Structures are given as structure tokens and as C-alpha cells.
Image (cartoon, rainbow, N blue to C red):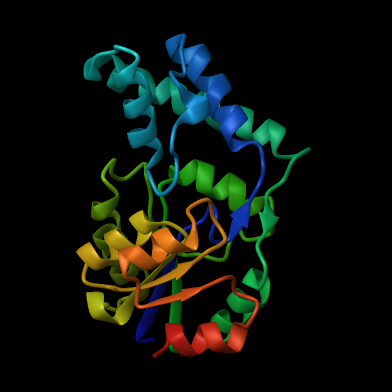
Length: 227
């Protein structure tokens, strides 16, 4: 096992689902406001970062935000778990075949680096049958700053597999410029996929090591991931 591939979730592996509605509902119930949520840019940000940006802009102090987070997450996961049964996430093109092919390789380990809190990640992935696909990860519930998450994923990989992956042996895969920037900050290779909200031009400007329109050409994607 000498390559660790760390995937983002939303816009990279899956799309759709009720997360934004669940998040909005939980914000209103917890803080009485969700700020300017309809126009807010969620792409590539951690869940706590999004909450803080929305509420700070609405005039709430950091102490108030921090105090409300535990209740917010409980409400959000409750709403998400209920709503996702009727409105599950959808796998993006090539994802199922790509993960199956990577899982079959003894030299590859799979993980996550995502802005989702860990409970949200599990609900979303569970709705598309990927609940047990990723043994390790760095999540928004670990740190509000995304750049801290790759190191957390590496620490968990060491505890899980006993392998001290060097940053250069890991790959960050995501659909936003923030995924690319996060991977570069960690000294990891970066692969972008243009299946999320940010346009391909924005991804190209971030300078990933490779970029794909989607994962339909599984063989080509694997060649790049394992290069």
C-alpha cells in the first residue's frame, strides 16, 4: 500500500440530495436565521466555516455561533437523515466503477478530505451505498480550516493501516479550486474534476496536476491517480 487517494464528496463523488434544505432548516431552528444562504458560496468550504460566515455576516458573535454548533449539528443530521430517504444523493459519472477498480488494488488506500462533518458525510455516502468505502478521512468536524484536514487524514491512515504515507504519496481529488489549494498546501498531488459548481476555467486557474470533465474514462483517471 503506497498510494493514498483522498476524495472530496459533494460535486466529486455525488450530487443532489436534501443537504442544503436540511442545513437551512437546522440553522433557522438553532439561531433564528440562516443569513443570506441562498446566495452564499458553499463550494469547497467546511460546514463550520459556512455557518460562521453566514452568521457573522448576520451580526452574531463567534461565542454565540460556537455555543450553538452542537445543537445545530444534531438538528442538521436529523433533518438530513429524514429527508434523504426520499431524496437520496446521486453518484456522478464513473464514480462507482472508479472506486471498484481502486478498491481491487492492494497498493491503494482510499480516504476522504471533505468539508462535511463526519456524521453528514456518512449519511450522504450511505444513501448511495458507499457507507463503508472509506476507512479514514479528514472532516469539517475535525477543523474549520480545510487546509488542516489532509494532515488529519494522514494521521488516521497511520493508525488504521500502520502506513506512514508521505504527503507526496497522497492525492487530493476534488471539484473546486479550494480542494486544489488544500492539496497543494499539504504537499500532495491534486486532481480536479469539473462535475461541481465551479467552472472548469476556475479549476484550471488553481493549477491542479490533472483535470477531468468527469470520471467516465476510468482507466485514464487511474493512470493519473497512480502516476
